[in-house]
Length: 281
Ligand code: PAF
Image (cartoon, rainbow, N blue to C red; front, side, top):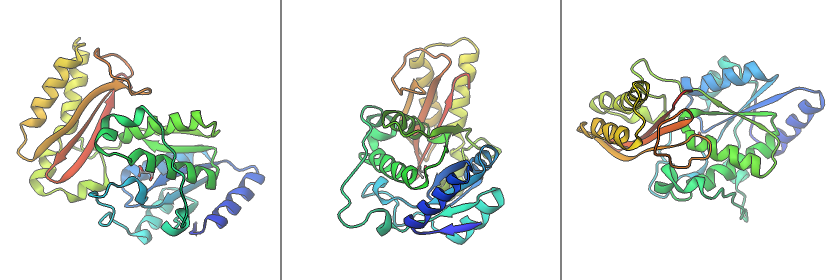
C-alpha cells in the first residue's frame, strides 16, 4: 500500500491507473477510522480494482464552535486499518495543499443543505461539497462510497455530482452499528458511561418508528412525537431535530411510506450524534 500526500502525485498516480484500464474507487474520510469506515473500504474493494482512501480533516466543514482542533488524528493507525480492509492508496494531503492562499471557490448545493443538519450547521455542506468536489477532481474515481449514516451528506453529494455532470457513481453503504444498535461514529468515543448507555435511544426510537410503520401507522406527526418522547426521557439527551423526509430529495413528508428517511440529531451530553433509517430499505 502506498501513502501519497501531494495532490500532484495523487493526480499522476490516478492518471496512470486509468490509462492502464484499472477502475478506481474513492472512500473519502476524515480519518479516526472505525468499523463503519472499514465496511466502506471493503465495499469499495469488492467493486473496483484500486481503492483510494482519503484522510483529510477538512477545516471548511467545521463551524467556529465545533471540534476541528480536537478531532482525533492518528494517521499511522488509520493507514494500518485501511490497509487491512483492502485499501491500495492512502491520500492524506495537508490543509495548505488543499486550500492554498488565495483559494476562493466554494461549491454550494442549495435547498437540500438548508434543512436537517444544515439548518444547525451553517456552511457545513458548502465545506463538504467543496472538499468532495476537489477530491473527486484529484482522484478521478469511477466510484465513490459514502455511508448512509450521513444520509443528508449522501443525498447532497448525489445532487452535486448529478448537477455538475461529474461522471462518478455514488454508492451509499449501509450504516454499521454496535451490538446495541448505536451507529458507529468517531464521536462515540467522547461519551461518558451514562451517555453511552442513553445514546442507544437514537436507534431504539428509529426502530420504534419502523415497527409502528410495520403495524400500519402512517402518520409522521404521531410517530415523530413518540420518538421525541422516548428521546426526551433520557437525562443527558437533548433533541436537535427529528424529521421524516424523502431519502433522495430530502423534501418533508407527512405520511410514512417506502423511501422515507427518518433522521435525527441529538446531543448526548456535549456530543452531537446523528442517525437515520430509510423505510423499506
Ligand atoms: O463524512 C465525512 O467524514 C466527511 O464529511 C467527508 C465526506 C470525508 C468530507 O470531508
